[in-house]
Image (cartoon, rainbow, N blue to C red; front, side):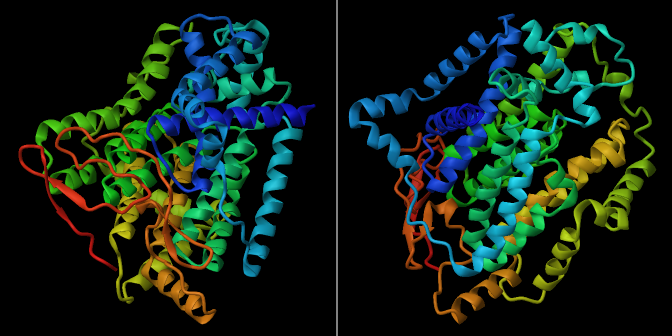
Amino acid sequence: MLVVLYLLLLLYYLVSGYGVLTVFRLRLKTAYMITLSLLLGVAVASVIPFLMQLLFIPLNPATVFGALILAALVLNYRSILRIRREGFPAFRRSFTPGPFRILPYEIPFLAIILFFTIVSIWRCYYLPPTSRDALSGPEAIAEFAVREHSMINSFFSIDLSTTNNQFKSPFLISLQMICKMAGFPFGQIWLSAVFVSFTVFLYHVLKEKLHPIIAGLLLLLFIMTPEVYAYTFMILYDYSNMIFFFLSLWFLFGYFRNKISAWFYFSGLLMGIATYIRSETLVLAFLFLPPILLVQVRERIPIKNIVLADLYFFLPSLLGYLIPGPLYIGHYLPAHYEVGGLVNHNLTNWSPLFQRYSDILIHLIGSPFGVHLWGYIYFFAAFFLVAEIFVRGRFNRDARNWLYAMLALYLGLGALGFVLPLIDLNDTTKRELFKMLPLILLYLANNAALIRLSQWISRWEGSPVGIGKPLAAAGLAIAPGGKVQAVPTGKIPAAPPGKAPAAPAGKVPATQAPTSKGRPGPSKKRRKK
């Protein structure tokens, strides 16, 4: 019976998340559509009970699942109309995978990954939450919320002077409530859907840029990172925050290449979800304003349209911070959290800032303790960073984007620890470094040395493919025969005035540069590679 209930939960995640994609009219590869739908469905499910709490609606199974179904129907309004016009097969085609093919040298990697996945799923299902941060906050609140039908419950009547976990995001509380109401006493089974979906998504991203052998090695290097793997079956905020932060940057850098406005605004939504999960992500989000402005200036977009576009981009992050933070904590919870008293008031003394940067590099990354946390992924990345200097075609645009993201994250984490000493080194900063790992993988996927090695392996085996090209961002895919082909797509919403008009993701359009008056200028043909 629990298997059926879990499949129903997965179906809900899939349908509601697909509705979010249709709002932005995104059409991607089937693997991306499925995995992104599941991840977005989890995000939708995490918001609904929280919004109900804000409206003081009782949180019982009937109201919660009724609201979830209603949200899925609203999000899939376009899909419902499409089914009425074209029939259900039109909807099913969005999730119809291409020819399934596994190459022999992929089997060892997939077998090891499958083993780690089964262990993680089993631990999520069979073992209760054990982390102190969960038991002293979201897990306990969710348990009492199921009994008392409110997130503001008798949990807050006990002595909470030794912890601040009751003030963290409702993200975990909502997901734990839904799983417990569905019949899973320990909840947390939603985390398995997040883990599997992200793993599949990441593998396909790596395979677009690198040979499957190298892609499999990199994915194993990521999954076998000791600290990160533990969070695939231990409910806390950091693993989910890492995923949505990475996805936001993946779509943002994709927008830098293809200028599809839907990718830009969807990236802003994903960053808003990441901020909803961990509020300090808002600071990190603004660190990507410089490259956004640089791209917009190069496109000669009018100042007014730049301001409006960037406002739309950062609005989800601002809401993701303000609603669960100052609004919910300040006006709903019986206890309040004063952040002002936790700020470092001696900001003119910069020595703690440089000390924090040094501690991150030496203690958290370069020491035996760092190896215990992350394995050797940082050393692997450093080796190929140096090797790329001596390779022709080094540091292409995509590699530079991901290197900027890594540098911005490093500088941002050090600054956060300097301004807010509560963000300590061995706990909060360590978990914030989760976000660095997928950024490293995507830099390595664009590393000139690894791309050349992938091309050499491909030529040696006699099946050259389009390795090293950003296929997904251009709406392209590799056909079974090794040829690059377009992915069928739908319509994309029009860009705001003064921006290049959005083009279907399945076509490689001519880029139109806006004129100073905000109208599209003459087309420029894409240079053939």
